[in-house]
Structure formats: C-alpha cells, structure tokens
Length: 345
Image (cartoon, rainbow, N blue to C red; front, side, top):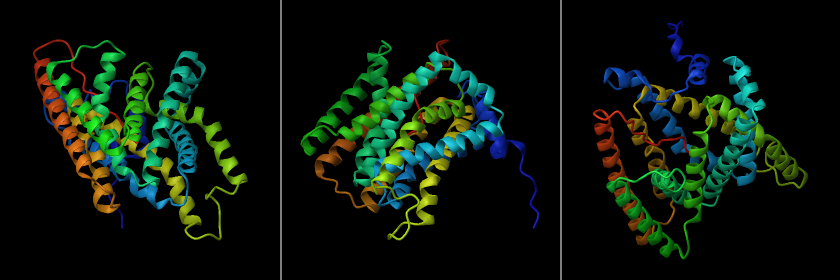
C-alpha cells in the first residue's frame, strides 16, 4: 500500500537539519502569530514523554549496572550523533567546535556535568529510588532560579523568593524523614542546573553540542566498558545468562537512540513554542517518573515524603504564576523575560 509522502519538515533528517541550524530556541511561529503551534506542542509532549518513561527502559536493562548503562549510553549516543552530523552536513560546525579551545573547554565541562547527571539518574532507577529522581527534576527550575542569583547576580522577584523558600523547606522536610540530605535529588538538580548555565555560554546547535560532549566522554566510557568486560562485570555481548542476549544488547544500544531522539524532539519544540509553554511542559517528565515510582515500581512513600512533595508542587505553582505574570508584563516592557526549561535525563 502506498502512502502519500510526508511534508519535508516531518522527515527525521530535515528535522535534524532545522535543529542544527537553529540558533535561537523559542523564536516560534506561534509567538509571532499568537496561535500555539500544534506541531511544536506534539514535539514537546513527545520529548517529555520519552524522558518520563526512561525508568522503564532502565529497569528493563537489569542486571546491567549504572556505570555500564551510562557508558553504553555515551558510546551509542556518539554513534547516533555522528550519523546525524553526516546527514545534516554538519562536519564543518563540528570541526569548528572541536578546534576552538574555549568552546571545547566549555563543552568538556558541560560533558562532566551531564555524565554526572546521567550516572546519578540511572543509579536512582537501578536502586529503586525513582521518586528521588522525580524530586530532583521537580526542583530543577527552582535551583535554576537560585543559581541565577548565586552565579549570575540576578535579582529575584517576590514570588520567586517565596517559591525558593518553600522548596528549601520541602528539602529539609524530606531530609529529616530520610535521616540525611536527599543527595540524589540535589545532585540531579544542581548538575543539570549548572549544565544549563554553562551551555548558555557557547553558541553551538544542539546536535553539535551533544556530539562534542559525548566525544569527550567516549574514551572514558570505552575504558569503563573494557574494564567491566575484563573483570566479568559487563552484560553487553554476554550470552548464556538469564536475561542477557541480543534483546538486552539492543536495549542498551537504544539508550543512545532515545537520548538523541528526545533531544531532537525537544529542540524542535523549543523552536516552535513560546518559552513559557516549554517551561510548563518540563513538569511532565518528573510527574510520569513519580507515578511510575509509586504505582508501578511500588516505592515506599512515607507521610514525610508526601509532605515534601506537596510543598515542592506548591512552590512550582508559585513559580509558574510568577513566570506567567512576568511573561505578560514583558509584552509591555522591552526587556525580555526568560523562562528556564531544559532536557532532563
């Protein structure tokens, strides 16, 4: 059966090419016309659904360790990125990024932060602490606000101060319940927050940026895979053990496909949607993670944790109200209000 050919903008290569050429996410046609771009909304929902459902994939990779999953994710992401760079004829941009020492150094620092984020996230899943990861991505927007003050010297609006204070109380409540700081949540939030700040300092498209970052990490990932294989701790390519085989290998390889694919979906959405809409969509992923943790993986949620999460949700409502107010006032004020949003996991 023959189907009509899709429009050029829907082909993966063309979509990747548009992402590679994009230099200003958020300059969407919807913001010019006032109507919400349905394609952009679909891309955004797709990206955050992928990120939200990532714990299911990580659970399916058992008995692979967090280190092996992260290392394989890096290596397969490199492979997918290089295919896309070839498809969009982006070798010139990649070469320019690799030969500019300032850009390379900045992206290398970003790579260290993102691999910390990935490793911590996978560790939370394989140790049955998905709720901790969910909390980390819930508080990430609030951490970004705090980092704006501490690192960039920005001044907080009144509602932003209220939101940060409520979130701080939430972390204290959960910390008391756990008998210590929720370090997984804090590492995820701060590593990704700092990653976002650093990426603002380089002018590279998402494909080139992720390619450079994974290329920087590739030697360390390859060394980790070699060491685990030499000591009998690897699962990729192993046969004769329960749960291992071709399907397991393909699932490990798919981590690179999902990583890059979700980035392309997110970047396409950021080009087509106003930033305040993208900022609201980012709560989809941690909400899905939270539901998976409680109702699929059966993680324990004590009264203290529920109180902490409710406080975080209240803080996010306050922050969202502030963002909406600021966005409306920016239409009358020449200064542009920026809403932080990013790609988790």
